[in-house]
Amino acid sequence: KGGTSLQCRHCEGDAPCMAICALDAIQRLVPDGPVLLNEEDCIGCKKCLSACPFGAIYLPRGDSKTVVKCDLCIVRTEAGLDPACVAGCPTGALEFRDFDDEDLKKQRSSDAEVVRAARAEAEAVAEAKD
Image (cartoon, rainbow, N blue to C red):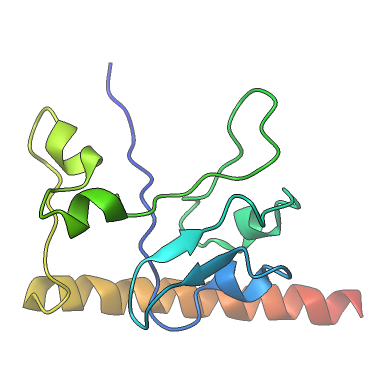
């Protein structure tokens, strides 16, 4: 049985999930670093779920009150290891690359278009409610 990988794309600039989080529970520790969730600050309002243009943030089953998102396995990558999804991918379809990779830059440019469109749509919805 196949599955779908919904990984956080760690949007460039002000990621929509960061922008909508009123408590700053989602932020970057360094500029251009991964977008990280501080579970202690998250109150589970779920606004970030609708803000993420890639559907990469979710509320797990069970009693959890906080959302879950990819942290790029920051502990693993800082130790020189691939993220767990890459290391565990049975077909080798996932890869972890440097942000300076030319093909990755093209993909991130395409992702940025999706983010811009999602922001515009969210702004239009917010204006319509006012």
